Length: 518
Image (cartoon, rainbow, N blue to C red; front, side, top):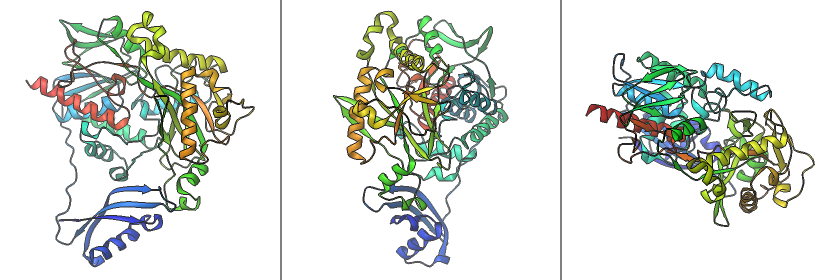
């Protein structure tokens, strides 16, 4: 049996295998040559005290110990097997497809956007302020919104599925094994597209199908059952239909609503991106700028309550950049991402607050269950109209926003196409601006130096999740009024990131296989 050790080390000791292994060997009282295998199974940084520490959990296998078995993936040939239609090629749809193949089903993925190579070209056009392709952008395309948005893999929903197996699946397709033991695993937007390509190759080699630029325009329901979907004039049928459309597929919600398919309104969150110099965040978190030689780029997680409303950081991107995540130049939407090295001079995070049904009650009579969706659209379009659209985003120095002062200029920013001086009180609804202001004050007490005019807010961070949920049965995961329709992932309201969406897609695949077997 291997020996498991929990080590508390200096950053320098933990930085190399030989460094921590020497300490592990001394702790166990064995000789170095007796060690057949040593591996890290968990790594995190404890920066709560003046001198940060690295917490390592390691396994030491000595001569004679049975070595750990590698995780095995078997994707059999599913040509000619029962077909299932999957709408959306993001993590929920891709992981649903992989699991279906393992279970002997043939997935057909319909992705409205383009493959990752062509999608990258479309995103370049957004950065240049040239155009937004409504079907191929940061939200839509192969791999979903996460492909060009950082690749963070942390999730709190580990009870929903096999979290480690999901990570192993990504490693199998090219991700670094480090994601298996980091407390907050991260792939990086520079590496994730290649991994997504490998997933695509696995699906196709096994006999599955992925069709790009196939926008679903309708769903075919016969006798209360979903039997397929329409892409314009083409009907694609299957034994079940999986909706894995992502959080920005407004047209899908509107189509379902027109057809009388049951939907539910749900709360979500909106706010801004806040951007600091990364060196400042390093200094605040590590109490020194000298630790960066041995420690990862510093991150933070912040929460607060302001007048009974939650305010919190979302999708924090150390060493990252802010990106234009709109699906039209008539909208202003921002998000954040980091490359694998996290080497940008900036740090950014979404700072958002709860949005509740009472906040848009004036829209309920006209829009019903879609009122939240329409409210979000109005905020995004209002912000864009203030700065002329074209991907330009409004921004304000952070301390000025908190103090209700006008900003006359802005610090340098990572955001492209460009940011222009504005006032958060003009582009944000009053309840959001006031909640954020209170949240920033609280965060400034927790992280001394956080509220500074070296930082700026950039709007609008509005796609944290969807304002609409597509309901499903708790046990079968099937829609309660349309049989054979399986909502999944962020767009259906059941996930909040790459891994939680992947786990949810996997569960839906297993539920479909179980039903078809019976």
